[in-house]
Image (tube, rainbow, N blue to C red; front, side):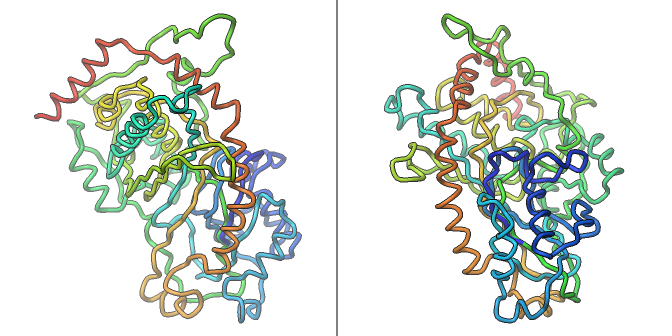
Length: 457
């Protein structure tokens, strides 16, 4: 299934097994599939029975135009004879869904299809209100600030260690090994084999790193295609959260220190303590950075100021394409770029923080304006292609009917919703959080100088 949704009001994509009353996108989908007669009610939430898989998982309030979900459902082969995109099947299920959740298309696939493993790259868009770069003075030095924003975002292109742009401990080898024992098929490095080797070879840690090559780029191989096997591409919110994220809800220490708080009377006060960051070439066994912390950002594009709807809020669209993203990675990347554009953080600080000996914390931009816009799936392998080629083509992708449904949902539902979110009070709270940030000049100089000396050697 290809699914699109506006994540506002939902606690993320994934159904909460222990809290079924919590509103989730998968909860909506499960109920609609039952009412449409496509799955048994007793199977909803039992993903092993339904063969349920997802290309990405989104957090609370995040949106999607391109979530791919694989599952087994009740269909008749004749339903696909003159409707290879499964548009009629999608329409029948959509009758039981709220307007902010839509199935764009339903396509057949092979029996062992796994949406996550088959996904090659993911593209996200983050919409930043123009006022965030210069609150209260939208015209003040805007061109200079836009250039700084672009310069900072350009630093992220390529393979880098993004350990300072996520909850670092979630991707440590010991935590991953614990998760691997519980869920042996769910832990990935996020890099292809060649990229994992490159990440290890370009490592700035003195000691060796160890990581298993990712298996998430290999499509399933299965020749038989039972009538009940379907892949449904869903519109979902783009979520960088890895499978590991569900095991950790405790905030980092710097997050607890620098969380948003209500203002009292009088001028805005800086944080009581300065930002903390450090540089250490000696390996701390409790805080190792490995290939699991690396990601490959294939491209980053930043638009000129625009509006999503006529007369809407002026905003900037940041488009990021990569193989996978870690928990909160995109929001930290955007937050860092905004802080640089506003002169709160130096560009060299962000550049230094991409090096493995660096330990720092980046501002976290608001979540509700992040959208997963495209999911790219690898072509079928040769033996699978012989069966699947004449059914859906060289690879699984939206057809013209699904693409039209996607455009309609984007223009009529998602863009108006994003425009309202660009006016949310959350931006004011984030602005105050940024204004409170400060650091010791001597500490910053030492941090950047250490990295410069390290790279020169």
